[in-house]
Length: 154
Image 1 (cartoon, rainbow, N blue to C red):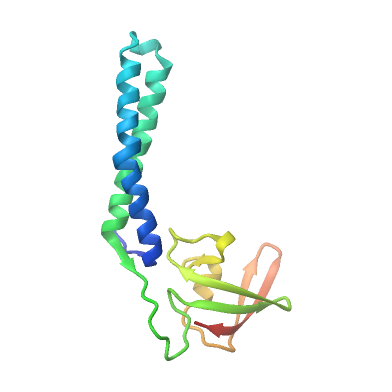
Image 2 (image 1 turned 135 degrees about the vertical axis):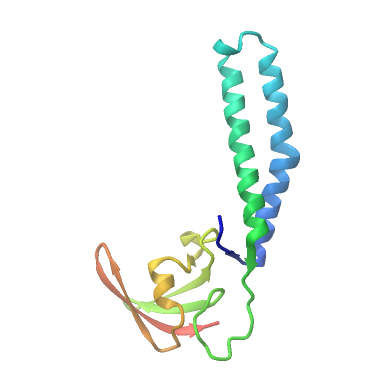
């Protein structure tokens, strides 16, 4: 990963908490599991040993990934938006199909549609960046074009 990684301060705290659990709890448990399985004899026919090694490799990969993300993290600052322009970290209220929907524009690793957090690299996120209150954005979706109107920017 060579590019910056954008995340809110809350998202960074969650990543650090996950890393701590993996390093302090999960990895030691898996190392113990591998050692116990190894003690059961012939490794070529020991499915528990193979599964434990695979789980340990997965956790090691995730630890490496989290360490790299945390090292490259750029905190999204929620500063006063005097120009009322949609930017990373903005919370926007949009009107779509006669209904109001609120979204927060976040980094791609933090995106979660169920929490109304959309990535700045998603089609809607890219379309919203740099726009102002009252402007419309149109997104091409599988069901056709969707028109959004920006009602509020926080």
